[in-house]
Image (cartoon, rainbow, N blue to C red):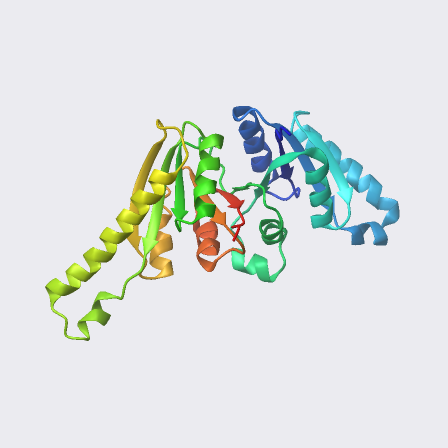
Length: 279
C-alpha cells in the first residue's frame, strides 16, 4: 500500500501559522498530500453541546483558510489519541507533523501529560517536530546512533526520505574520567593510551556499522565519535545549530533522558522514528 499522506496535528495555538507554512512546504517538496486534524476534548462536547458543533465548524474554516484549501481538514471531538489513531489507520498516514515551542520543557510536558509526549510514545510512524520558523531545507541531518539494528533501519529510512541530504552520524562511548584514573597513580602516558584505545575501538565500531548500511553509494555520510563524559556536555556539543538543519532521533522503546534533552535543546526541527527491535 502506498502511504503518501502526512497528518498535521494542529492545536490552533500561537504556533499554528508556522506549522501550517512549513507543513505545506514539506508536503510540496516531498510530494505528499496533507491531512490536518484538530481535536477538541470530548469533555467540551459533554458540557457545551449547543456550542460544540459550532466551535468545530468555526475552527475548520480557520484551518482551511490557513492551509489555503491545500489540505484535507478534519475537526473532531473525542479522546485525542483515539481520534488520531483512527485517522492514521483509516487514511494510510505515513508521518505526523506537530509543533513544539520551548515555553515549557519537554519533561514538564511529560509530567503534565502533554499531547506531544503521548504522540511520541503511542505511534510508530515518523514524527516531524517543528520547533523553528526556519524554512525547511533539510540538507544536513544529525543522527546520534547507538549502532543498534533500530538505528540502522532509521538511517536507511532517512536516506529514502532525504536522498540529497548529507548525514552526520555520531556515536558516543564512555570511559572513566581522567581525574578518576589519576587517583590510582597511573602515569599520564598510560592515561592517554587508555583513552585513545577507547576512542579507536569506538571508531572501528562506527566504521563497521556504516559499512552495513544499505544505502546508495553516492550518499554522503560523515562519522564522528565522542567521549560521553556527562549528559549536559554531550547534549551541548551535539546540538550544533550552525551546521545542521534537522536532528534525527530513533527510539526502540521509550524515550531516554538523553533523547528528551536533545529534543528540548535542539534549535532545529526534529524527526522522531520509533523502530522496535525484534529479539
